[in-house]
Every structure is written in C-alpha cells, then in structure tokens.
Image (cartoon, rainbow, N blue to C red):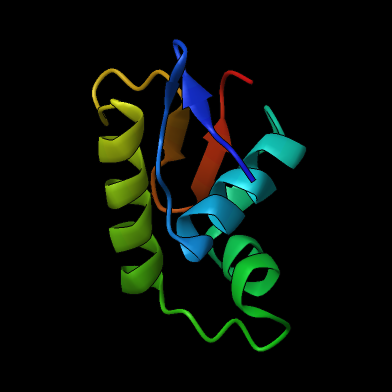
Length: 86
C-alpha cells in the first residue's frame, strides 16, 4: 500500500493506513467514531475514542494537514470524521 501527497511518499503505520482507507472509501460521508473504530479494529471496536483521535492527529501531521482549516480530514465535532479530498 502506498500513499502519496503532491508526489512525495507518506509513510503510515498499518492503523493510520486503515483509518485513511476507511475515510477514503466513504469519501464525503461522515463516519462516527464508533463506525470508524469498528472498521479499523474489528466488530468490538477495540480502539478507544482517544486512541482514534491520537491516530487521526498523527495521520494529519504525516499528510501535512491541520485541524484548522483541514484539507483532507474534516472533523464533525462530537460525531466523527470525513475525508474531503481523494
């Protein structure tokens, strides 16, 4: 699996890649914290909300994204996230 931003390769952990894959596959659709955790960590959603937030933050940093204004990963406060660009 490979992720590139403006031609440069972005090294992601397996979990970061899975989060990004889920967001891209559901592009422009808001994914709740629990939906995303379930898709990434399995049916029981082993990852906590705080773990998910931490992975999103690391993913944003690696993508050169910021929370304000976001370019790739948008937050829906109190609900979840969505991908804005593919």
